[in-house]
Amino acid sequence: MGPLSGIKVIEIAHWLVAPYCANMLSDLGAEVIKIEPLSGDQVRSSGSYFKDGESYLFAAYNHGKQSISLNLKDPDGLSVARDLCRKADVVLENYRPGTCDRLGLGYDSLQRLNPALVYCSISAFGDTPGYAQRPGMDPIVQGMGGAMSVTGEPGGKPVLVGIPVADNSTAYLAFGAICGALLERERTGRGQRIQLNLIDTMVFNLSTRFGQYVASGQSPSAMGSQHAEVVPYQAFPTSDGWLMAGAQSDPAWSAFCTAIGRPDLIDHPDYRTNPLRVKHRSRLSELLNGVFAQKPTEEWCAILTEHNVLHGPIWNIGELVNSDLIRDHGIIEQVDHAVFGKLPVIRTPIAYSASRVKVQGPPPLLGEHSVDILRKLGRTEEEIADLIARKVVYAKPDQSGTAGYARQAGGSGA
Image (cartoon, rainbow, N blue to C red; front, side):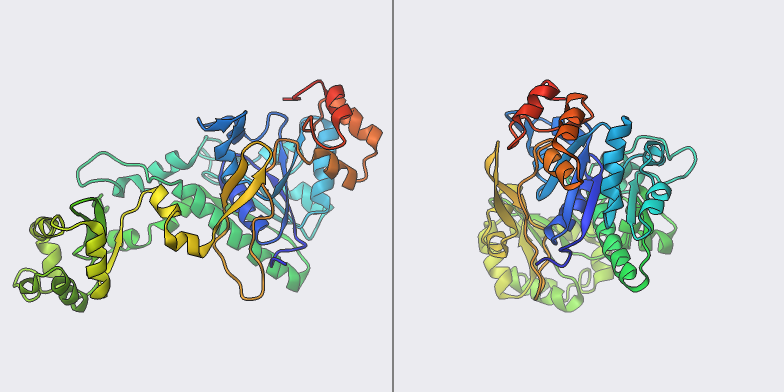
């Protein structure tokens, strides 16, 4: 049993941030029902990686969920969504502020139906006038949130962080906030609304860069792979690749110099302390680049490991996910998917001593569970057929037991 077994989550969301959070809740045992429009989550049709119309990007962070496809602008579609929320523990949405309110799925409306509901809203910029209704996604918020100004080479153009750091970080915060609210509900019996936004998350992510700004009054700049306050601590070119290594303290500097065969640098008047090394960063970096370029990465890793020096090879994605390290951790699991076949997905990397964290199933096809969900809500077979025929609900055409419904719906329903 996962620690969230018995918790029902309704996801009214698209793109990445809220679906990614719901993915984690599913891995911890929650039942997640994803409400999608008739055309599906926008990620289903975005990007360039597809197989038979199914998106690999959607599959990357939507596993273990059930999908029901509804026209929420139809009163009957809205009625189904509200019935689901009435019986839910958590509702998670990431539309622009006010969108769910206008649909009749906002917190105030649902809280009257379900006072114990934990309702989590995620937006790009919060409720601030002039920003609330602006479209905002991860790359835009990375730019506004300072991340691009400190990423890239010194003096170079702003660089986007290579993973969706604004979305991912906000998803992690939402995950923790929801778990905290569920714990408080156990004590009080009351639900509550949680609000997060991507731009605040990026401020929170500043951490050491904020400390630099407060101390100096100057905005930090891009440093490439180098640490802003510790030298050496950067990427070094080897004879066959790249290596990240550093000396995080003056005693570590001594071990570092011994390992690379340059003990003469330990007490060098320009390098013996970190402030001196920061002052002479450029010259020291050039010197160390020359040293590391003499051996391959694997050989350097063996040497630095022997001397307990902080280091690691710079892996690409393929090298990372196929490494013995990640294979040993077992966080990449295989699921059986109707289109992709054996599909690798990433399990939430949390381990409990007494609870299970596990991928509960493959990412759903659009409307794959529509009929089953409606049946559990008490809708009759005639009512379900009528909803599908009127394109209030879309049910996957080859869903077990729904071939007749699909014919009445006239195809995709998108």
